[in-house]
Length: 243
Image 1 (cartoon, helix red, strand yellow):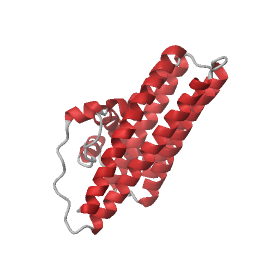
Image 2 (cartoon, helix red, strand yellow; image 1 turned 120 degrees about the vertical axis):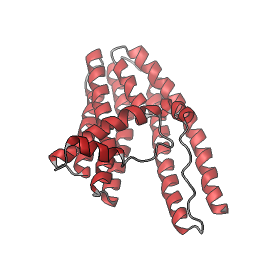
Image 3 (cartoon, one colour; image 1 turned 90 degrees about the vertical axis):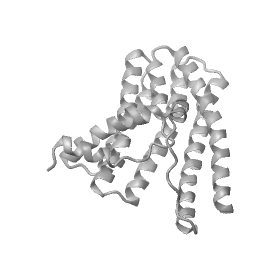
Image 4 (cartoon, rainbow, N blue to C red; image 1 turned 60 degrees about the vertical axis):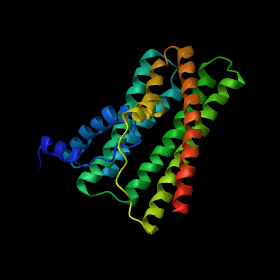
């Protein structure tokens, strides 16, 4: 079996493009996922098993949000659980590319877990507001519902953009051109929309007012990004039809 150093070097050569990836995912989550993927390879885990490990960390943290009264220690535990789950979410794809054991079943499982994560995390925030915020107003309860709508629509629209783009590339008359250069400015601008940054807001659970404010700001930022993404993706798909 290859040594860990050799596995890490091979994983560095099996990375996806950094186009459209924020600085957090590029410099924090992907390197952490690479280490986890190397460890998973050493102990013989499959990519689908790594996805299940990611789900265990993520869903345990989400359940804690809904079931446990907010506190600083809970915030630290939830942030850690979500962040580790996110790193394992990166590790499963890296392990699949390293071993050549990826497939439609693994991609399907990964998307199912991602979708469940988005639905459940905002639902858990709603439950927490209802259970532990005294007499929450309607606006506070609508906040996680609005964030949930934005998150799910962004996920579904982005996934459709990717799949329809692949289909057009397979059937189009022209070969795809060279990959676009990676923009550091774009990677910085995408930081507020990165899931890793979203996880950080849960570290504020010990200060309910600060958590609500941070969560509301991220909801607004994600809504702005959703509008920008929808316009961008629509134009890209229309351009593929015109081509």
